[in-house]
Amino acid sequence: MQTETSRHNHLSQTTALLARTPAALDALLRDLPDTWTAQNEGGDSWTPVGVVGHLIQGERTDWIPRVKMILEFGESRTFEPFDRLAQNRESRGQSLPQLLDEFSRLRSANLTDLGRLNLREEDMERRGRHPAFGSVTLSQLLATWAAHDLTHLHQISRVMAYQYRDAVGPWRVYLGVLQCAGHSS
Amino acid sequence: MQTETSRHNHLSQTTALLARTPAALDALLRDLPDTWTAQNEGGDSWTPVGVVGHLIQGERTDWIPRVKMILEFGESRTFEPFDRLAQNRESRGQSLPQLLDEFSRLRSANLTDLGRLNLREEDMERRGRHPAFGSVTLSQLLATWAAHDLTHLHQISRVMAYQYRDAVGPWRVYLGVLQCAGHSS
Image (cartoon, rainbow over all chains, first blue to last red; front, side):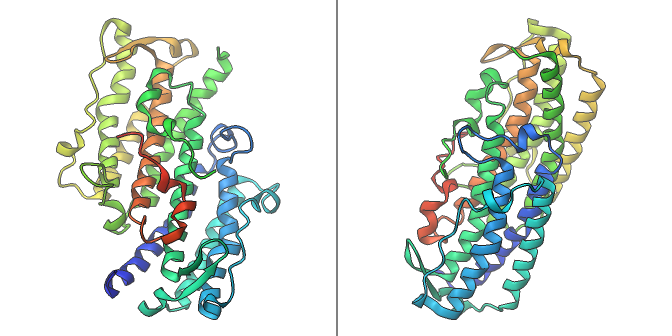
């Protein structure tokens, strides 16, 4: 069991990461050639552009709406399922720079929203109802928001490396990212 | 076999990525709490700070020195083996901001150096000798420089996510990065 202090640190650690992800993706992806950003790992797998669209959907419909549902309704209402493919409709026709701008704007607004909620230590153990998992805590939801950024940064680096899988020749065996099976699909 | 045009694009794609990695790592890691940057996946596995030290070593001793060896000596001299643990000596006592600054400075200088070499299409198939693989091309070396950035961005996102493996509770099963076995160790 975490102490109250570690729970408080946990929230500030989480928001520190959440605040940095848009700038990190911007620095990596903006104006990079399409070879890197608009290609996938085959079939209907995701491109880096598609991943940014997905992160935008999370900002719109998943994280803060669920935080508010926990605070308002506890376990009496089940979260809306998160549409993992909504970006195919919602982001259609938008350029990568537009998507990066939108992600940055929404994340910043959501962190402001989160700050205004003035969450206290005791709020972290408040519970909501997830459509698949059942009872979950606010603390778990907030940690997942940050880890979800990391799972998609992990995915983007893997999708980009895939484009060079042949170009690297024999070095392929030394590059762990090229052995990654893509665990999120 | 690639056409000359695609080989030329390949070099500009490679340098486009190489130029962005320091800023992406800076945006992600600078001033982030130590929980994220100074912890590893157990044992003697690497921290994000250690990874930045390793990238610095690559800039100092691996990529450009090998490019120059290919151009000067072809296959007649074998590359120096790359010391994957040199950062444990060389970066000792340096803060993460110092390491990020140093990585950025070295990468920028190396890309300037690369540009001055005025590599032509026909240079891309020039060959050198790798201590483990034997004959390799300049094209493969340059592609590996970029893919090596991505394998370590992939690793950093995995190491950071590992710190939240318990905090996310049941969401763990949805987060692919937490199923990644760490292929680069």
